[in-house]
Amino acid sequence: MQKKIHIKKGDTVFVNTGEYKGQQGRVLEVIRKKDRALVEGINLVSKHTKPNAKSPQGGILKKEAPVHISNLMLVDPSTGKPTRSRIIVSKEPRVRNSKKTREETK
Image (cartoon, rainbow, N blue to C red; front, side):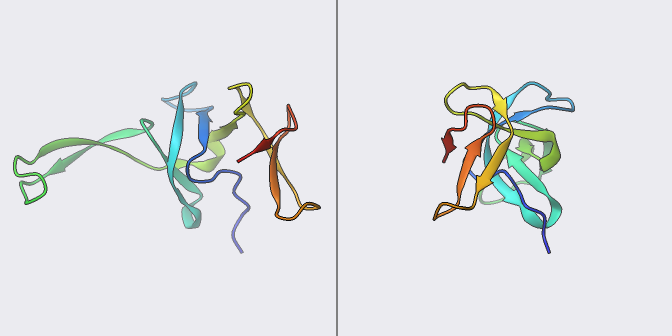
């Protein structure tokens, strides 16, 4: 059984620990098996590539590396500040809410 993940692809998240602490970015992908997410502009690593058809020059590319889910917080769309989220099961379909403002997050 996998853990419940409070972040989805396309969400804006806040990084609360590590080298990129305090920065925000958009989630590009969620890796459920490893409890990690790729966030745009966060945790950039240098990838050395050989010349190929896609990049004939080759060289060093900057690429996002996965960040653990526990280091991310959902950003409340109405206030723009990080918040915890909860899922309300009584409604159909299930809805994610901000704990601070109690507004629905998409």
